[in-house]
Image (cartoon, rainbow over all chains, first blue to last red; front, side, top):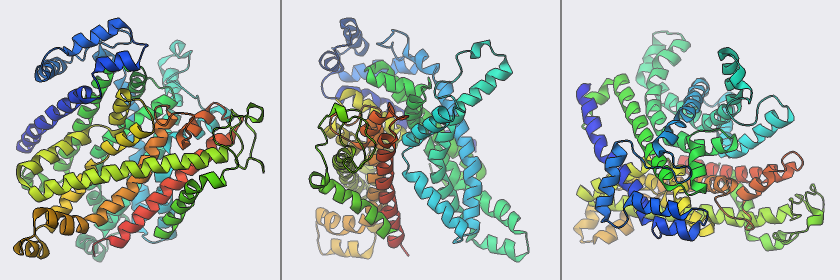
Length: 326
Length: 261
């Protein structure tokens, strides 16, 4: 196992370097120099910011040297300072990450909680009315624009019914509450955004569970299990599901970029001060150091997600660690 | 499925094509006196806060949304096929290099890449198409590479080599056409995804810019009057849902039909 881990980690180094190269050169290959963009496209940014930018990227020096310098600073966790308020980019991003991660982790948890039984039930009764209903739901869920669902949810639960708050993470008076009520207030605020996020991704995951279950149920060991008279429940949940969940682990790793990317839309609609909202605001105000920082961090989080998924897969399925070459 | 999906897309396609004939009014014409009228015979889908006819804006918006979806995915597909075929056919260091680039690009959340690109370019019609196309080819490249890898050892390819066909001929005449089925499926699904992305960007105000109508920015403009003018929010949302559902049904139907037996 440790050998497998080392091999995987070594394999990540070039990808990580690639991420930094892409992020860095995206900045340089963009039409014009970043400084042009500042002067030509955005009159809102001050002259001081322009000089800050030139200094930050050392634009008078050869490109590869600029890259190496930037990489060295980035590896030390120094992403420069924001044009907007002069605060270190790393700190600005770090204080936003917990919110985004919490919402995504909660969403992921509920997605799995609902999608696994749905997928299993669909596969167990393949071709039945229930299965068709699940498939229909999946197609509808896939095609609904999430931001529209969020908007309708806001209008229905937040405005018309007045059951849920429409924005933010806590009520204005939350600071005066004790820890218990504060937590309730936070949960109350998270219900709508997490609910919409779950709704958005439930379809795809249920579908995936269903198809891996259908495949698992077609295997010989399932026929054996049924032949020896095991109850259907045991066959489904102990034998088939265990194997059907293996590919799901990889899917979770692959879902990370989608979830992180999607946070831009949620956090903008629900006014949640997370990383996605910060990214969106930075794009609007062309706060390049923050954009670059989040781009690199987003990719690294994705890389970590994939790595964790690979490790989990290897732990769950011994065939992987023995046979895979690298 | 193919039929249902095709019909959904066809209705919107016809609407977009015949927009000048079907529109009851000029989609850009502002009549403040007729602002926020609910649906009526004169304005079948009502009017917006500037008194513009929503049906006309939806029809012209369909042109924009469909063009963005199809052209962007066309671009991504061509890029993906070329890169994937080159990697799979050439093999060796070129394959390793290209696939590593794909791995690296796939690490970036697509929406982040798109937004970062929007920060450099001015948002608008052509940039949005370019950006969605340039960030969407990686999956296709992987798909085509895998197909080419499995096809290139087959007898008919060996036969073509034996009779002295050039590499371009083998790729263009034999490998790529035979690898097209999964590519078309992924492109059909991709068009739906691209339309979703475009509408999300326009909704956030960084996609298609007003006064050019797009379903996303009609929705964005309707957001402020959600409580009093439901049609401004409901109609564009349903239209987006309609088209994306059409693409997904068609793509899924094609996938099942062409599934290797």
